[in-house]
Image (cartoon, rainbow, N blue to C red):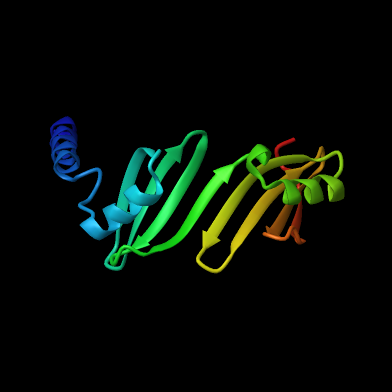
Length: 149
């Protein structure tokens, strides 16, 4: 009896999953903006709300998220990458201040008014969270003991 109920639940779940769309319909204004800005996007996945549309995709080796409102205005992009994609002025200041430490990852958040870089740096004992702006001003926001050792 339990097997019959489990089989029925599984079949129902598979039918529901098959009927939902992986990429909800996105309005033409949003698609126009997206296609204008992100011509090399690959593996695009969309999610939508009443006011915003979010595309998650790859652009080369960089994972990217773009938030576009329903009128087609690009609100924010978030890009995830390694140190090789950091602007040289920021890379210089980070390497100088955190000499001998590894830049583990970067999240770049760009809006209409500013771009900020959230940088994870680590050494053999600690992880440092650092925020940088376009001019390369650095602010260490956190220092944590590594738990992965």
